[in-house]
Image 1 (cartoon, rainbow, N blue to C red):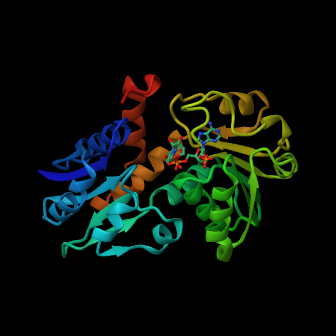
Image 2 (cartoon, helix red, strand yellow):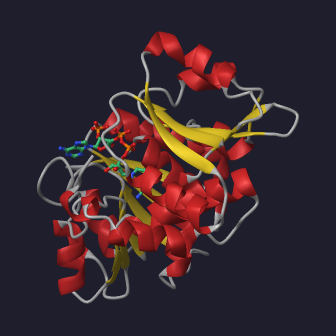
Amino acid sequence: MRRVALIGRPLRRRHSQIMHDAAFRHFGIDAHYELAEIEPGEVAGFVAATRAPEWFGFQITAPYKQDVVAHLDEVEGPARAIGAVNSVVRRDDGALVGFNTDAPGFIAAVRGAGVGTAGIRAVVAGAGGAARAVVWGLLDAGAAEVVVVNRTRERAEALAEAMADLGRVTALAAGDPAVAQALSECGMAVNATTVGMTTPGTAFDVSLLPEDAAVFDLVYVPPVTELVEAATRRGLVTRNGLDMLVAQAEIAFARWTGIADAGPVMRQALEAWDGLESGQA
Ligand code: NAP
């Protein structure tokens, strides 16, 4: 049996396991997605073990997205620029290559919603790993400007500085009066904070957006956040984080198995899973 795994601590979600195991079954691949809640001291040993031929690769969540890099043979350019490796593929020669699925997963979700990115102005709330992937993805997809809004201004500034070579990125603190103007002029607003998931409320005021703006919430538990609800009520094109979650899983699966169209099977499995609505770990 071939193996893939998710390493992190604590591991609260089984969404990836549900999606990948369904795809392995559907495509007749004898493999399993394991949840490996490991201690910091176990990271090096775990990664070394995945050089064995039974492994396709593995995925990484908090707090190991940085730690893992030192143990890999290669990190692809986008993952390096984003500063987060969330997936690893084991090449046939046993080399471990780190990559990031969040940036292409987000852009795939945007395209799936029929929303264009060339020349747009976007507001991205958040400055963590997900926000970095979204900003990189938007700039790579031709956005004219990205305004990063974050509760902690210094983190927004660090993100803007890290991406400055790629395009126009402005950093604002969440309470800055300039946020309202940025929202009123943007074509897309993205929530890449945990607001709506861990805390109630919305990361930005949907009522300020133009009528043709699109709203993307990266949160997928609960499936209908206050943000998605407010954007839907306004008649804006809006998506929760499920499209991105499925798209990024499809990308990892393709890198591991060569099968590029696992998305629909993965989505079906998620929707049939009774843990989705409840946010079950
Ligand atoms: P992270 O690195 O921990 O960053 C969290 C972000 O949320 C930071 O910008 C933080 O601001 C902000 N934040 C936290 N609590 C806040 C509050 N009460 N008010 C305002 N801002 C607050 O997390 P991440 O990995 O980037 O993930 C962010 C979100 O994206 C999560 O909900 C995650 O589930 C989601 N996500 C979804 C997908 C998908 O496929 N759909 C993929 C990746 C992530 P400070 O800097 O001020 O602390």
